[in-house]
Length: 186
Image (cartoon, rainbow, N blue to C red; front, side, top):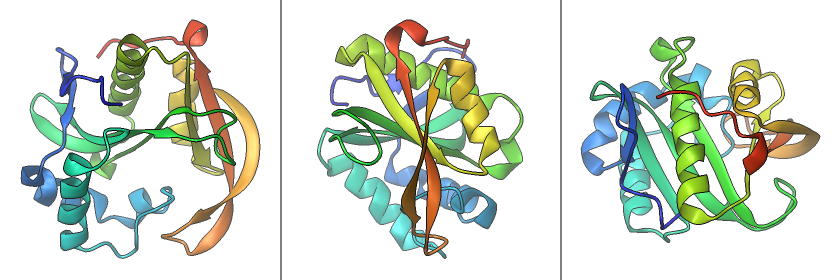
């Protein structure tokens, strides 16, 4: 992900590298069971210090994994991440893998569809990748619809551990190939 710009998009919805200054806002949005229960890795409950440490680590971590804040008219609404992952249970070949979350007050407004579209467009434009991988836990229909709007194809379910729920859950792996990408205006 090292070739992506620090700021993505020029319209109402923009992505920018998250910074420690975003910690309080992101924590307030993220510290919500309705958001966290759909994610694989965060602890629950999450602490403010964990949020700060995660953002700081993303800023100094390997360039293969990065974390962006999603903004609408300058207001942070959630986050999107990208990492280069090896082939494994979540994806059939090495390549970019994206994940995202949005604060509950902003659900159903088309924000994440536009943010994910900007992010996928930037990955295709700046990395030379021809495939982007993602996925959702079964039951997360809103997130799956976002991916389907952009051209992602569901590949089927595989078990994946969900740290917030402390359980192995059915996970639907998805992939987006460059020719199938249907961008949405940001």
